[in-house]
Each structure stands twice: as structure tokens, then as C-alpha cells.
Amino acid sequence: MLIARFSVPSWCTGDVIDADNLATGGMHWLRWDATQGAFEIVTAIPPGHRPWRIAR
Image 1 (spheres, rainbow, N blue to C red):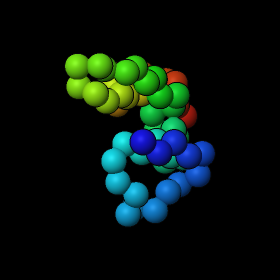
Image 2: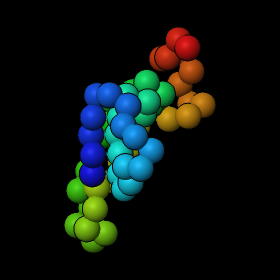
Image 3: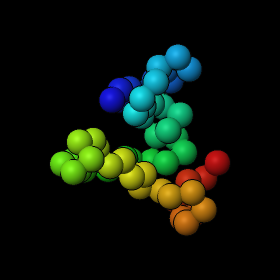
Image 4: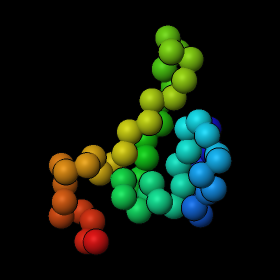
């Protein structure tokens, strides 16, 4: 998992939260899922659900 406040190169793979993701999805919520052995990543602004929260 990579969390950065700047845009990362396209060759970065796996779970990436960067400036581009933050600009479109806002804050991200992470929850450890022990059965999957990975984080569940949820954006604060799901696509299409809350258009008033981002003025772009």
C-alpha cells in the first residue's frame, strides 16, 4: 500500500492513494479485513453520490 500526497508514477502498483485519488474521492477510510488479509479502502465521496461536496 502506498499513500502519497503527490501524484505517483503509473508503474506504482497495488493499493495506491495519491493526490489524484484524493482530489476525486476526498478522504479515504481504511479498515483491516483479517479474513482477506488486506485493507478495505473506501472513499469519502463515492462516485456520483455526493456531487455537491466537490466543486470541479
